[in-house]
Image 1 (cartoon, rainbow, N blue to C red):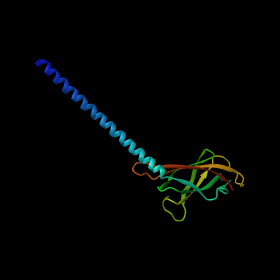
Image 2 (cartoon, one colour):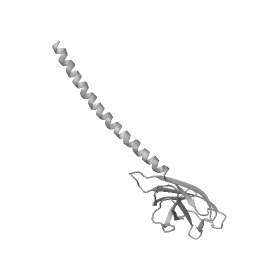
Image 3 (cartoon, rainbow, N blue to C red):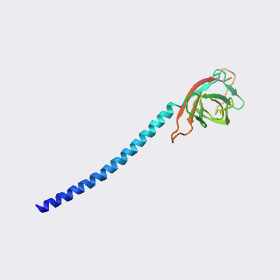
Image 4 (cartoon, rainbow, N blue to C red):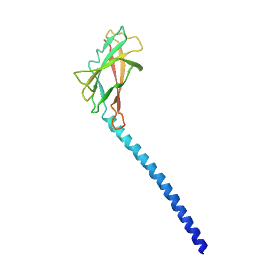
Length: 162
């Protein structure tokens, strides 16, 4: 019997060590999962505060037929600060490059809530700026990074070139 008691004790200690190692792995895994959920919640919260809208007369968008460029105005309609350098523009689904530096209107120095920014987009196709051609313009914006996350929003409108 003495031999059986020692073997049982060894098995018990071994089982306790294995359980301790397994619980440490599970705790680490749970910590990583909780951190991921926290970052996702911050991302969703920032996305909900990020909103951009077109500003100005969409029926008469400034157009330069010689250079195939259009000028659009975007307003920060959300509560987070947008990064004017993190911008993507598309004309009829084709990626468009930004010409020059985006311009803040009314003396603003950052793209905070309510501020309008002027962007000039270079089209990859010829534009007819006679007041009859319509183009679908999409703008994609991102916020200034906050706590390691970046919010984003996009807007699409049909504009008349003229």
